[in-house]
Image (cartoon, rainbow over all chains, first blue to last red; front, side, top):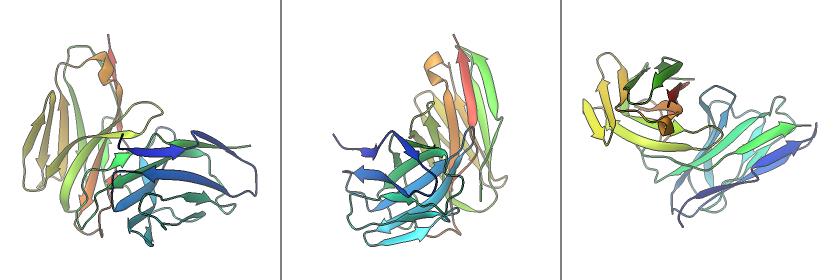
Length: 114
Length: 113
């Protein structure tokens, strides 16, 4: 099956702790994205990567970090500097290029603060 | 920044009726896309319309685009209870670099059986 997976489905963070959300795709897509969604709201872009070993900040990058060492993987770390991390996090991928095509989304990770 | 704004925020209709959702945006675009999200799930792509297209159909979906008014509408005909979901428009702005999209706030559609 081709697709994009995220793990875990639920994640609990203690104060002062860094946590990492996993995102893997086997669609052979060049571009990958991380979004944050708060209740009843739209998606806000955190970081995106258009090619391996390269990534750019989105609209709300503060308190987050990413890496893109492999084409298939784009993990997101929520650092202790992110003071309000409780949200639904969505990862997506697309073929990439200069124009935005269809994005394929994972099932999401819900992050809760203990 | 949120480029797309959907209207209405929430819509409740009876099964069999048509549902119309609108999206307005602020800057020039290469294309506009509509996505659907069931509660607590990821988004699913529905349809993409390019800036030089005015209307596009896919099954029970009809999308229009008016670049002079910077607006788009999504029409779902003969709605079903299974169409209950949030619907988002997303724009590929000509001024943004690469392949990123900007999503709107969404319309929550409820189709009552």
